[in-house]
Length: 314
Image: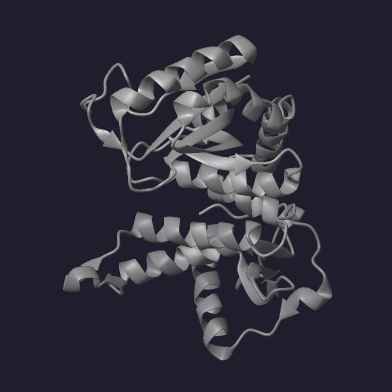
């Protein structure tokens, strides 16, 4: 387990008195860290943020039993170190958490438990108050994000990507795009259109507006990156996600009546026309059509009640 040694001095008012049970667990944690580090600890402080979220344990060193002088007066462990040790200890003792879904108890793999723990910490950092605009984390929390992703400068990389995406989107205007679709009015009778800007990764979208706050969107992009990196299948690396998340214009046709689905053969030609037209009008990298026209297994006469087009813009 890697020790975090680069954190700066902490504010006195963030130190909290640990409960007796928590203190006993932290002491056991520090005993294992003594064996790993070769240091000896005399006491510790538990550090929380203003919302009561545990963030760090500062362990203060002392001379060894034979008078050995420590090379440092304190060692800082972040909460990921502590929680990971706690999970590993439970699994070593056979003290598993059980999943009683479908009345079939089964152990949760340690790797999954650690991933869920990191997911919970990340959510607390970036979604600390979902009812408000999301804000840039402080430097300590950025270090925790980097550790969760095992990547340096995650916030800066994601903010740069969001800025690039927003710069592309800000070249266009939704009302002007809607006006362009008027030429297909007769063919679109019976369909309700929703048009929005978004970022796209494979077949997932996140809707955007040109006046969205960059920090708010950076938090959301970080969460999307974590989700894509931890799927049970088709996992992405952080680099793959950042490279392939793209700005797009998303167009969804939905049956207005919700009772009269159209045949795919009726709708698809309209989609192709719109895609070709947009390629002529805008700086388009790719148009992604639903049902994958060249490889789909759907019959042309299949009934559909909605149709989504994704126009990737440069």
